[in-house]
Length: 127
Length: 133
Ligand SMILES: Nc1ncnc2c1ncn2[C@@H]1O[C@H](COP(=O)(O)OP(=O)(O)OP(=O)(O)O)[C@@H](O)[C@H]1O
Ligand SMILES: [Mg+2]
Image (tube, rainbow over all chains, first blue to last red; front, side, top):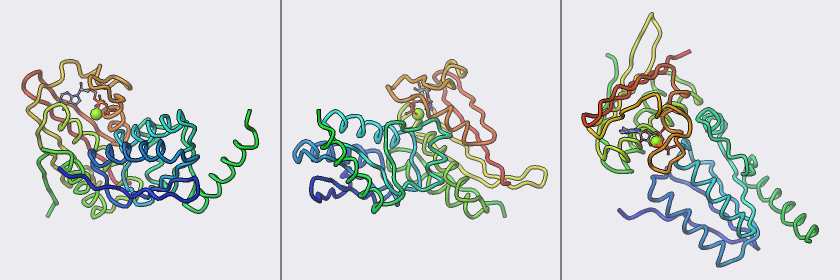
């Protein structure tokens, strides 16, 4: 089965991916692989994943997001999720998934501003 | 007439089809956005379990009524390996597939009624319902 590729854009040293279609498992895994590959190629300092169009985040996608955040973190890249619908956020918590290490912002614009602050802080505070 | 619909689960694409079918029916029965997300997510978990553990099965969704209250019922059926100890698989974190062990206990939390019937080597049937406020 050919899976739909989710485009990943690079703006400055931030990668932006906006998920616009219902993800089936194979395309979700493809997305994770593509994104991690792109992070390692570009050494991006931050990644924003926009989930505005997702109306379901189940344990499979939830775990994938947690994996992306953990692996990106190991490569020194911050991950911010944007546009999580309120109903989806509530359902995630009830399901038992809280994504404790994932940062979220209301929308793409706020996500970009958050990323800006985060990457500035970390370059100032370099040890 | 009460609505009812069913779909076969044979691939990961069918998981999306099943949860979309459940969400659409929930919406047409007047469930709000949060309940629609709960119902669709529960169906996603149950349909994925069919696909992962039994390979194939069916998801049926129908409108139900009890004491004048409208609801939606989801029945997931497979002829897979079955579950020997239902109490164990209902624990958060129990998995045989390196998953998160979140699907069944999570789906139970998202729905109002939740019953598993299963026999090893015969199959598994999960029936769950959500009632409208
Ligand atoms: N339809 C089924 N047939 C046979 N065994 C099942 C079925 N559904 C679930 N199980 C068993 O119950 C266990 C727990 O299921 P559950 O959905 O809670 O977690 P998981 O599928 O392992 O992980 P997750 O859903 O979090 O990705 C599974 O690992 C599997 O052993
Ligand atoms: Mg599962």
